[in-house]
Picture 1: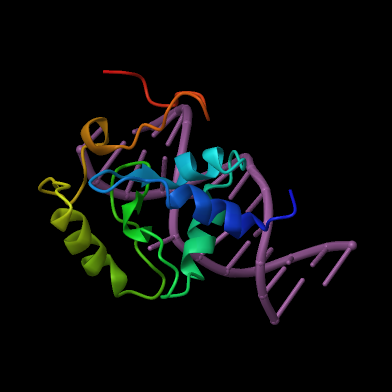
Picture 2: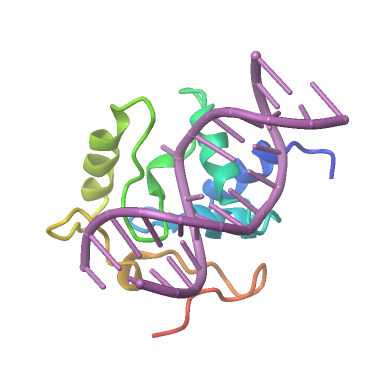
Amino acid sequence: LSRSTWQRIYAVVRRVPRGRVATYGQIAKLAGLPGGARQVGYALHGLGRDERIPWQRVVNARGEISVRSIPGPEEMQRVLLEDEGVEFGLRGHIDLSRYQWRPRATSARRETPLR
DNA sequence: GCAATGACGCTCT
DNA sequence: CAGAGCGCCATTG
């Protein structure tokens, strides 16, 4: 593929539906970069504001909003998610077993056990 | 080309 | 369940 790594990552993030979240590792895997979770964060970091990408739907494997080196966006991310109906627990973490996005089995193997 | 960096993840305590 | 340690890998300087 000639598309850049970032473009592939963005393409996957765009597929995450409203009201659901995906983990960095999950995005990486679906983008063809197994083990490249950090690259997903790196890519989102350099995201332009005009890009219409639901970056707020990407959280870490523990269901928490990742802390930026340059603080600020975390709070907005939480507000945006709550606005979509995603609930946060007392310690600010999302129940992934309930809100994690489960893409169709056609494009990727299941990485979250069915409930 | 080598070393450091970072919106991460998995295991073990 | 929370924290520490070690592994990961594309991008940067």
